Image (tube, rainbow, N blue to C red):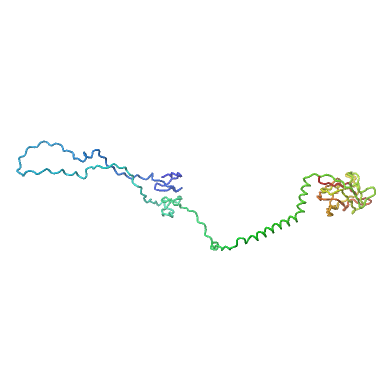
Length: 341
């Protein structure tokens, strides 16, 4: 097995590229090519080229003279044979260039062929073992329909053609905001005033004049605003009203009504009571506001929030009597008005 130098994955002995990251595996495991032997360098070329003298032979016996003609001049020495060592120049040994050999394919490793070189690869490889081409390329995006590939022609417009339209749109928006603010101003103002009423403190205000449309002798309407709960305003029957006038306009935050003749339970049930009061408030500009106050038939003060600005006059009309039989009359013990401080 060959280990990848980049990611450390194991590869086959014949793989040239890593199957995990596609890195080149190198040639460290391939067998080294044989190096041609270098001829030894001769130290003495002259001596190497000269033939070695033969060993002296023992003296031979004298032969009789041959009657041959006299010998001519001596012949030149014969050249040395070709297979004898020759002097060479020293040179640096060069390793042979590696040659890529086709990778043998096993039957077990046959799988998806490479889209580039066609080499079969095992199913678990992501890169080709021969050329490192990715075996699982990304999917191509789907082709768009023909009607989406057609470009619409652009309409030519002049440089300042939309300026007038933009100005008209801006003017319409401004007018709409002004109209909305004008229509919603009272509601917004009331919301702000109500918030101030809840967060601020209130104090009691006393009317300067109290007038009643009808009253029982000895039970005047002034008893309803004297600050004492043991005296009351007596009205002969439903429909009677009392009007309270104030010195200057103020914001009426709340009204406290103490119904009946007294806060004592025994005295409370002695006379009749009004279970509903119609509250009519007049502002300094003459505008009138009407509210219906529903009372609970029990002794003690009952508070009602109003939230009306610029109040100058308050009129209360008794209605829905309870316990009114025989010679009894309607009793209203106390009225208290509060303004924002």
